[in-house]
Image 1 (cartoon, rainbow, N blue to C red):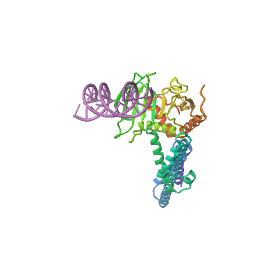
Image 2: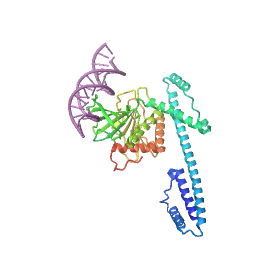
Image 3: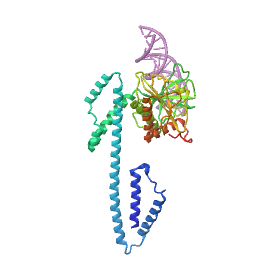
Length: 383
DNA sequence: CGTTTTTGACCCGCGC
DNA sequence: GCGCGGGTCAAAAACG
């Protein structure tokens, strides 16, 4: 019977590991379990190796029982898996609804074109079935949940794509090479010397998919030629290699967060991430000129390294950046001479929470940083 | 020889 | 309407 106990223990550990990944126990490293399992399994194998004398029938019975039990546990495991999937789906759907609600709030709070927005939303409501409230959603059945989830995803994707169509993500990084290793294949299709910058601007197109709309511009900073500014525009219409996916996730997540959680001026906005502890002159009051002023541009400033802190945008003005440092592990830290508004604090909270609570975003940011630094040997800044 | 890069010409939007 | 500047095209050159 020791074998049965061992199997039970093993299954318990497996179940525990499955239900909560973060609390998963590496049973091979857990001394008590390791010892118990070790001795039990050993005795089981020894029992099985015993010559089939009087115990033959007993062993066969045991084997049968164990097989039955194994099947039961497998079923239970499947149930747990499906439950987890459902919970994940619920979570995603609720997240979508939150996003939509935030977007609607943003639209309704904007005094400009309020009537137009209402008309648009009415039109949208006529075109698409209205999304249920959270309570309704939670009370609906399994099939309804799936349908709602799909609808929510479609609506969200449409809204996001519309917002992102012209949105850009700019990455500032110190690099000897003018090309950032972002995992994608790019084809150069043009080069120009822009006004106010002696360094030429290179234009690249994504070469990985057929007619992929993604483009990027690469230009060295006029003030500091060691800084390379890479601006990405558009969404990939094909699968990406892991390295490129990390970057795409980062830029997409950054766009998503800011388009959903912030205001946008009529003349376009520029936001900035930075990973520096202190304000750099480049960040405090410099406007990174966008070739398309009507497009919102998010700037990931990776020109300075830091261990624990990351700087996030606060002021969302059309022409100036006034970021202040934000500790990802705590509350926003106020910088000298810069007073963030309540709205900005809220935005920072959203961003902070998003990164703190979303391991994938955190990982994507780390991957993006590592791809830019291009030095896998060095330890990455802890986010 | 196929692919990629270079570079001058062209297009288009915006401000005056 | 005109000029300016950013973005794109496409032929030629370079490269492997």
